[in-house]
Image (tube, rainbow, N blue to C red):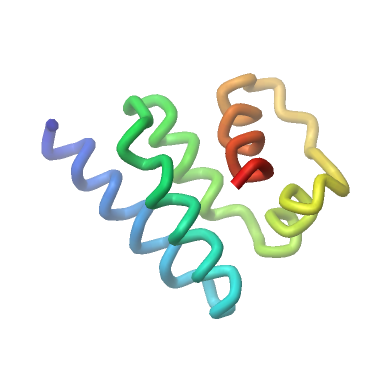
Length: 85
């Protein structure tokens, strides 16, 4: 694994662990750990974007209450995995 990919994984894991609310920290770190090793570098960058989305939006994704119009099908892949988690 390249150093850049390893650094990106560490950045994602750190951000998922320290979101601000303990409940979302627990949910996001478990989700991220469940998929991070299965993703290629493109999907890792999308996951990095995903873990930086605000908590309210993530909760609405989880509850399947709303879905922002993402034109990028790869981001929809991350959101779908999150909803199924």
